Length: 368
Image (tube, rainbow, N blue to C red; front, side, top):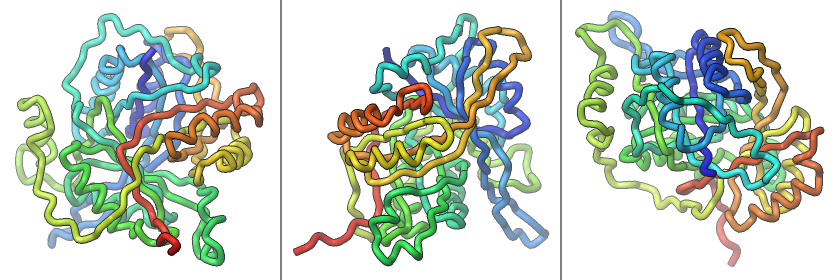
């Protein structure tokens, strides 16, 4: 069975209605964490700008791939995400390499649901930087009009321990920036975020990109008083619908100034486990070949099987451990996790893998 992971970042005020609608179509399990959404606000008579943050909820859940477009369309319709500024949603094709995790796939009923226009030629980018640097890196997406990113806090494990004396200058606290962008803009945004975060320097961070199967992007990158009937972002969204794609937005990227080395043939290896299990499981994964991980605190909502409008939900504290690993290392990492009880009830581990296009970080010079 092909599986999709659907991820949405929406205004916090929309979350309750969306959760209830998802429960109504049969979603019984999803994960959620708090994040912020930076946008550029025009301020004052003189036209200055500043970055302001909107509080948002980011949540993810698994469904069979053949219902992805209808479920994403439900989120767009219910949350009125067609109005720029309310949120974004995207889907990615994933695999569950451990058979015990099949029960995490939500079997939903989509009969009667309409499908809205979605973007298919879209790329996701995740950037991990030191805490306090997230806004600088996120602003690159805003400045080129690529879309509104989401930012959350995490803790880095592994890489600092390999930096020798330099590790004392590298904080463990991290910020993770997620954004989805038209594939035609992915390269310029990727390299721009590398420059903004100095990710080709020791201990600065890590960035990777990955293909998305469907998305609805939040294009409301600026906020301020309108001097026309529609904002630029609303016009962009309207043209997307008329032309049926976002490829028309392609822009000249210019000549690249740096000879960056990109990492390829990697896998996005996400491990979700019960709270306080992450450190032990990441240590096992690192011993088997993972370079490090970023851990984000989240909660898992387990809805009842009822389709009532106001479902009861149990909340479980969870940790998401994000790792980018060599494709060849995946079997060994899974075996190592199995040996330390990752998939047993105490830790309740869920492993989700997906393809990455490329990644970039500091690479020490090869020894002669």
